[in-house]
Every structure is written in C-alpha cells, then in structure tokens.
Image (cartoon, rainbow, N blue to C red):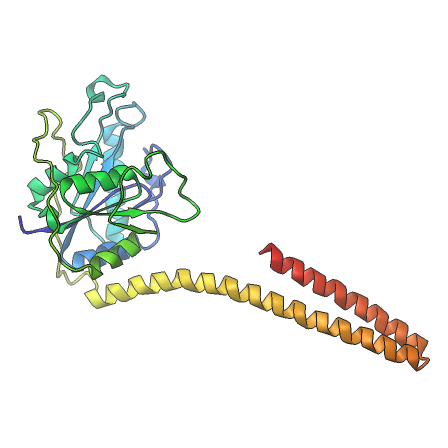
Length: 307
C-alpha cells in the first residue's frame, strides 16, 4: 500500500451543517476548503471523505437523497478545481427506526471501518495518513485506524460536548486550511500502527458513493504547489487583517476621544482666561464649547468600551 491519504469528515469540516441534509441545493462549502484540498493533492495525498449519516437509519433521508447531496458536493468542489478520491458513508445506527439500517455497524465512527475499507480499496498506507474532523469520534476513528488525527475546533461556534475530553487529538486547528498547512509542514515520520484488523461483517461493506476518481496529481488543471500554498496563506492573512482592522478601529476611536477631551480642557482654560479678563460673553461661548466637547469625548469613550 503506497498511497497516503487525508481522511476528512463532511459536516463542519468540508461544508456547513444544517442538520440532516437531504436537499442538494443547501450544500455550502466552508471558506478555503478547495484551497486546502488542492494543496494536499499537489503534495501527493488522496482525499477521502468519511461521514456518519444516521439520518438514513432514522428515516429522515434516503440513500438516493444522500447520493444527490454528495454529487453536489463533488460538483461544487470540482468547479473550484478540487476533487475528492472517494466518499464513504455509514447509514447505520443501532437505534435506527428503519429495520434494515438499525445495526451496530463497524463502519460507524468511532469505529474505523470506513477508513479500513477505503485503505483496502484505494491501497492507502494508514501509517502515513491523517484524519481530520470536528468531533471526538473522528479523532478516535483515525487513531484506531493507525492515522495521525487533527481535530477542528471553531472559536465561538463549538459548544462543549460530553465526549470532548474522551479522546485527545494529535493536533487541534480552527479549520481545514490550517489542517492542510500543518500536514504539509509535518515531517514524514512513521507512527505506531494502531489499525484494527477485524474484517467488516457481511452485509455492512457498503461503499457508498461510487468509484474512486483517482488522484489528479500533476494534472495541469491544478495550480502549482507553490501557488496553492500562497493562496492558503492569503486566505489566512484575510482573517488576520480583519482582526487587525478591528483593533485599528478600537485604537482610532480611543485616540479621537482623547483628542476631544484635551480640547474640552483647553476650552475650560479659555473660559477662565475670558472670565478673568472681564469678557463674559466670550467666557460663556467657550463654556458652551467645553460642554459640547466633553459630551463628544464621553460618547467616543462609550463607543470604545462597547466594542
């Protein structure tokens, strides 16, 4: 087995997760995923999607709907020059309401069945491969298959889960773009093989989503490795620039408030000078200006604190 691969979860890793998705038109890629996929493909990795889809077992979605959703996922990625080499899903769940799918399947993560099946069919060396996902069961499935595992945690969006501390990922990142950068920089060191060699039970060997498309490494339609990595860096810089812009706005507001406060104090000084000189009309005018400037300064300080 000579191929290396990156196994990726589907929802909240490649695309948004609206729930049990059965409408292809609702497929929305997450920002930058096509850049991550292209960079990994250029580095020689196969990209394999592995996803639990218990909605089939619960009667909320059919396999036909699911295949249509995955076809749309492939289409949107393909339009951006990114291609996956296989999509494997597990439609089973032990508490399913559809008898045919109410099974405790070896395919269902955190069991490593989907990864082992893909490794067998695509000739993947699991020790040289990675698993990327946003849930503890993604991490566990990857590690049980013998891969290094990366967990995606999105600041401000992820809610604590009971299983969050049950399994420790090898690395934690914020999105697939960061995961790709980490993988590309990681040394090609061998890791202990933790794969579970058990065969899948008969009747549960469901490859689900067609034949592998093959790795399009070296294809002229893909950007060069250097170009793709630059695109990934540009994407990350955009996040950084937005954060810096917010900080700049904060600093400018505070600066304006300070300047207005100084002007208010100068106006009060002019009030005193005019009063001492007997220019009462001028003193009253500067007093009004001082009050107005002080109100402005307080307003700017309040705006700064509310950010």
